[in-house]
Amino acid sequence: MLASKVQSKLYQGKEKSMTTSTEDKIKGTFHEVKGKIKEQVGKLTDDRDLKADGKAEKKEGQVQQHVGRLKKPSQI
Image (cartoon, rainbow, N blue to C red; front, side):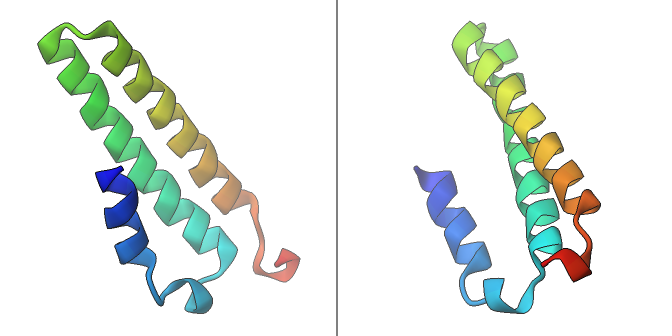
């Protein structure tokens, strides 16, 4: 919940000036980093669910970054 509030503040007023490919890359990076943090906290606390959530979010972020790289400005 807190992360989504932080994320929305980061993008507030900037979405209109960014292309969707750039936006996907930024959001993907954010989710990948957040996933890495969750995964490490899960390892440290021996919380399998948190570790799995972190891995999944990291993968989602990597996919979103890849989608952003594949998009071309002419496709928008």
